[in-house]
Amino acid sequence: MAPKRNRSYTAGFKLNVISCAEQIGNRAAAREFEVNERCIPRWRNEKELLKNMPQQKRAKRSGTVRRPNLEDDLANWIKEQRGKGMAISTVKIRLLAKFIAKQMNINDFKEEPCWCSKFMKRKNISVRTVWTTVGQQLPMDWQDKKASFLKYVTDIIDKKKKLLRPQIINIDETPLAFDSPTNRTVDETGAKTASVLTTGHERTSFTCVLACAANGVKLKPMIIFKRKTIPKGDFPNDVIICANENGWMCETIMHEWLQKVWQCRKRSFFQPKELLIMDSMRAHLLESVKTRCQKLSTTVAIISGGLTKILQPLDLSGNESFKAEVRKRWECWMSEGLHTYTKSGKMLRASYEEVAKWVGSAWKSVKTSSIIAGFKEAEIISLDKETVNQDDECDDLEDLDLDQDLLNLLNSDSEESDFDGFIGCIVCCNSFFKQLTNHLMEFYETKDKASYAFPV
Image (cartoon, rainbow, N blue to C red; front, top):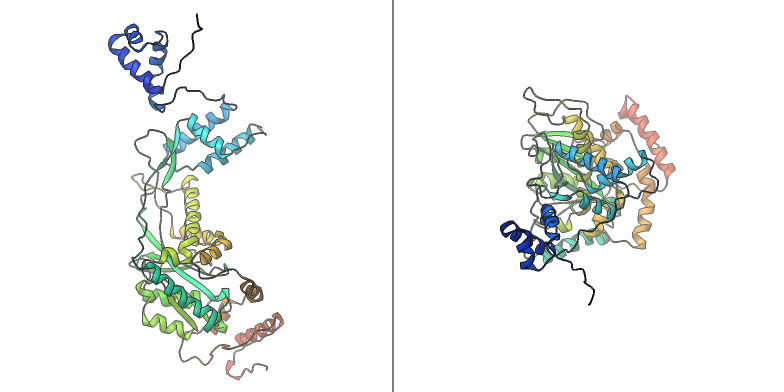
C-alpha cells in the first residue's frame, strides 16, 4: 500500500469548508470535501486569520521573531502615536527601532527596509493614504512653447548677455498652510479611516516667495501673510515679512521684493546684467515691474502658462525639498507637546514668529545640488567645461559680504539720487574689492558726502 501523502489547501478552500461545516457539521463537511475531519476544528479556530490571508495562499508560515520585545515596544509606540492622530512614516519606524535596539544593547540589529516591511506585515500595519491632489495638465502645444522659451533663454545666456550661472535667477511663489500634515501614514491594516491630528488650519494659508541662482545660491525668502497689517513679533533677520489681504503676490509686494531682496543680494550694487525667470502670474507681467527690472539691468523671461512643471527650476526640485523641510518642523512642533489651547480645549495654531523660523531654517536646509539639478532638468543650464570654469571665476565674488545699510545706500530707490552705482566696473581680484569696501565705508561714515572724493 502506497504511503499517504500530506495535502495542502488554500485559504479560500478552507473558508468554504468552514462555511459548510457551520451549516451541516464537521463530519458531513469532511465527507463532502474529502478532507480529514480533525483539520476542520483547527480551521474554524483560525477563521479570522484565514479571512485576512490571500485566498490562494496555502500556508501561514513565517520565520521566528528574533527580537519580540523590540517589536512589541515599537508596535505599542505606533498605536500610541496613531491614537493621538500623529502621522508616522516608515523612516520614523526604522529610526526608532534603531534607538530601541541601542537601549536594549542589541548590537547586531540592522533597521533595513526589508525588516521594516516584514515587521509591518507581522503587526498587521500598512501605509495608508490620507488625501491626494490632482497634478497640472500640460497644454496641447507645450512642446512648441517649451522650445520657444528655451531658445529665448539660451540666446540671452550664451549670445547676447553671456551670463554666468550666478546671473541666472528663478523666482517662484509657493503656498503653504499653518498645518502641513503628510498625505501618508502608517496605520493598522483594515482601518476604515486614517486621520492625522492638526490644529484645524490646513486651509489657513500664506505665501512664500523663494528665489535662487543657477549655481545654487539662495536669496532671502519672503513670507506674505493673509492680513491687512504686518504682524508684530521677533522675526528672524533672514526672512522678509509682508502682509496682504489676499495673502498672495501683488504689484506692491513685487516692488517690495525687488527692493528688499533683489537689490540687497550680493553684488547687486554693481548692477550686473542678469536674467530673472518667472512664471506668468499677473504681478510678474505688469509694465511697472518690467520697467523697474530693466533699470536694474535685469532681463525678464516669462514661462508660459501650464509649463511651470517642466520649465520652472524651483517647481522641479527646490519647492519639494523646501516643503518637506517645513513639514518636518511642523511635525516636531506638533509632537513636542508645548501648545496653547482655547477655553473649549481646541489647540491653537503656530505663531507667526514660529512659522517664520520654520521657513528660514527650511530654506537653508535645501541642498545646493538640488537647486542646480532643477535648472538642469529644466534644460536652462548644462554642465560643460566652459560653464565650470565660469563658475570658478565667480567664487571670489560670492565670498564678499557688505553691510546691509551700505547696500541700501548704494541701491537707493529714488530716481533723483545722485549716486548711480558702479555700472560697468570690471572686478579683477579680491584686493580691489577690499580697497573699494574701505572707501565705501568711509563714504558712508562721512557726514559731508558731497565733498567726499573717491580715489582714482
